Image 1: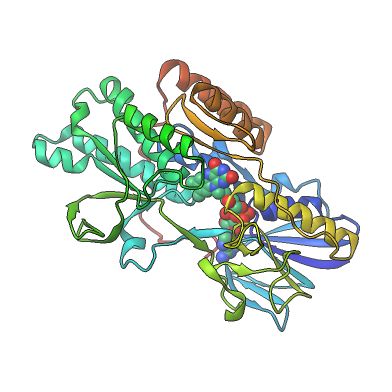
Image 2: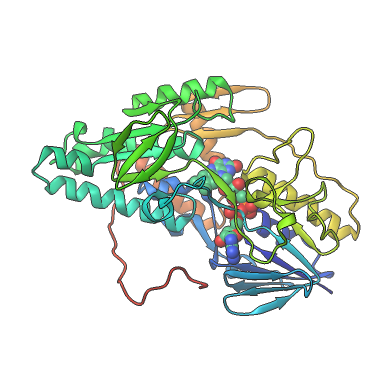
Length: 421
Ligand SMILES: Cc1cc2nc3c(=O)[nH]c(=O)nc-3n(C[C@H](O)[C@H](O)[C@H](O)COP(=O)(O)OP(=O)(O)OC[C@H]3O[C@@H](n4cnc5c(N)ncnc54)[C@H](O)[C@@H]3O)c2cc1C
């Protein structure tokens, strides 16, 4: 049996592991988390609509019936492509073939200090941290007697007008519009400001102009101040500097403006291309290491005529690349080149509004939101999770309330940056 090591159990890695022929391959999934999670709903964790466990599922439960698949917790520290070994925080695992499916991470475009000072929703941990920050600020704002300080505490800046930025700005706008009055009677709507800045002339740049215009209109209805053509250049001492030179004070900055490939220590420099992604051919084989290393999903840079800058870093390309690679590996030869079938894209703005671009039609409003709900519900792993998420949504929708605004403080010691370290 061939030994296949997969780094990352996200959409790409887990799909591949499940599809590889059980009688041909021993599969080892390495992931720093012991669960698979669902990034499209991270913004709902950050805005207290769902909890972390609602959209996460333990690997061990997911693979328990796959006797040829094992899970290894660990953070990848080194890949030795000559010795064919991956070293994690805990062990070294030899491979016959390595598949890198480690996804992407925040890209701060070289701006200093951002990693330590801004909030994010790129991982479930970041989303939970952002939620706690928002809740902490609402509580402190409710106690604050000085109106100017209260406004500072309750000013939220979202940087980036892609789907993640639009979704989290809309969710905070909805808290301002619908939750404050009921749950924070000490606060007035004008105490809270939600601002979204985007460098391009429109929101949701990868979607149609109609969807961009709709998203803008929906965000305005949720009292979000949207500033287009506004590029952030730096953030120091809580002052945000913009490209036109002006500076503004913000204590809470939520970064959604860029991603890059997850760094993979040990991979030769020649294999890393634009956006820190790993360069692959049309079969997802890594440049120069075609015989033994492959990359799929967000981290893979496959430049084709249709996608000269690589495929969009979204769930569908990741899943489809995994399915195609499984077909080739199971067949024992690389005969099926990858071709992306774009099924469309969606983004939701607030409780019952969304925009959708499907291959032949673009639409928005309640219907788009309903379709968005159905698709996301189907894609979450675990029947229990699906039921809990559905119940949460029905409850939130009918009562505009949630019992999830809990500010749980972790104990301080012992210090560990993350599990698997
Ligand atoms: C907030 C947010 C919202 C999104 N919304 C949408 C959406 O609505 N629709 C859509 O299509 N796409 C959306 N995306 C993008 C989508 O989630 C990604 O394109 C998709 O997850 C890529 O799949 P992947 O398997 O390549 O990587 P991932 O799903 O990111 O999986 C990577 C895995 O690798 C693990 N890993 C990473 N580095 C290491 C390491 N060094 N050692 C060990 N393990 C490691 C991680 O823990 C993770 O489990 C969203 C992303 C985010 C962040």
